[in-house]
Image 1: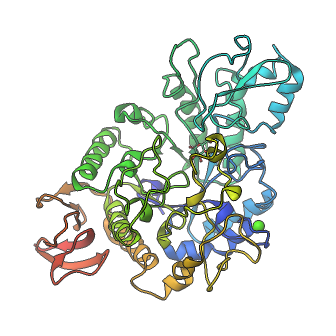
Image 2 (image 1 turned 120 degrees about the horizontal axis):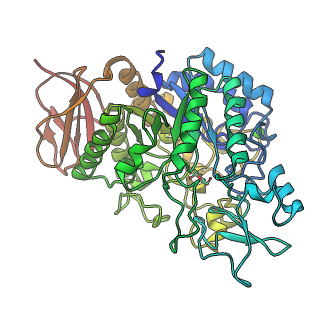
Image 3 (image 1 turned 60 degrees about the horizontal axis):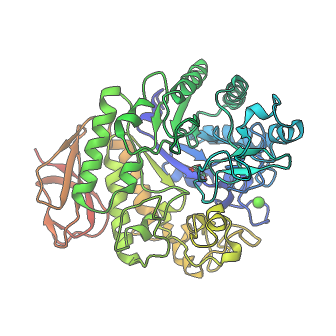
Amino acid sequence: MSETWWRGAAIYQVYLRSFADGNGDGIGDLAGLRSRLSYLADLGADAIWLNPWYPSPMADGGYDVADYRDIEPSFGTLAEAEKFIQEAHAVGIKTIIDIVPNHGSDQQEWFLQALAAGPGSRERARFWFAEGRGDLPPNDWQSIFGGPAWTRVADGQWYLHLFAPEQPDFNWTNPEVVEEFHDVLRFWFERGVDGIRIDSAAVLIKDFDSVEESYTDHDAVHEIYRGWRRIADEYGDRILIGEVWLPDQERFALYLRPDEMHTAFNFDFMARPWAAGELRASIDLTLETHLPIGAPPTWVLSNHDVPRPVTKYGRAVTSFDHGERRDGMPSDLALGERRARAAALLAMALPGSVYVYQGEELGLPEVDDIPGELRQDPIWRRSKHTVPGRDGCRVPLPWSGEEPPFGYSTGEPWLPQPASWKELTAEAQSADPNSMLCLYRTALRIRRAELGDGALRWLEAPSGVLAFTRESGLACVVNFNADPVALPPHEKVLLTSGPLEGDALPSDTAAWIRLSG
Ligand code: GLC
Ligand code: CA
């Protein structure tokens, strides 16, 4: 693979805890992942991005990191992680890990030291400790997971946590914090990882003088990533990928300047409803903001924080909004699956890199009947059991067999799998050429062989239809209308997300074709 592999890569997101369990304790681990690397190679993954794999009390699924230089014992050991990196490379798969710079765990050494050292200490200056207003917190900021963003400690001071109380925020104006993360980056680059996904990348700098809640996208955050880029560049071909949720695309593009991150997740596309005009607008906006700076766009249909596409696209409202998650809204799963298949062909035909969140290739639906007492997402607790949160897209994968745990484990999975998933196992789908899994495999193979990295050109199309061609000659047509439409004149149909009706493209169906002439 070339030095710029990441510009057009298909990146598979592994939520390790739910991927495959190698030792029967019900929790996915490195042994399980290593044993299934060939599945990912067969699928056509160019790279794997793993959610945090560090020692963690799991107050937020590992995004509460207790030690940035080791591996969570229930996942395996550092030695196994190194073996995994080598084995992935041996089958042609790059590795991307997740670094969480905004906050650590309240069980992390630094935080324990800060508690012990007391007010005014150097140890506390690594976090945001402050005096309250009498019995009130220092200000009224709210946690992104619900409830106040401050928690009081025994000596009366408060500390800031934009997320759960178990996730104290670091003070990024403190050079010790800057140095510490430089060292963490080097630690993992030395061990061969090819890229870093940067968690919550836009919220590291806080403005406490503002009357408003003010922590998103302050200019000073860019200096942090310039420092990270210098380190990545010391190692050559290593990349930085930002998790940057920003409504303003111009502000978003600033993170992708040549001396900052290589790419960032494009959540605009993922958040749009299933509608031709909306998706076209998102594609145009994305291309317009990325092309001038030379950064490749990214296309994401799902991840571990959002509803599964099959469920989302089968609902009466098909957009995604963080503030209004629509958990539990009824869904027509057959319709959702049809659209999710078409959406996959659309995303994979666009210029740039594409992400596949584990289970998306199996067409798994959101699981919305997880019993309350088994739910682990802090959103569930912090919302006082009013918002179910993200566990429904984190249920362990079904690999094989007729009943849970479906080859995922020999023990009891940490979240229960629906019995109906027997039809969705990787084994069952491998045997069915019309399955979602076979669609993903074929699409990723064609994409790698034939898509190329040339520009996109829109083709004339009836209203409700998106049609574009790439310089390589591969064209993609998606029909969002209720009735079939004729395909443009073509030499060959390479792949469709569902059967054609004669030569017409049915509703909610996508086709990859080679145009004639
Ligand atoms: C990111 C992660 C999410 C996590 C949050 C706090 O948004 O994707 O899973 O809860 O950051 O670290
Ligand atoms: Ca395990």
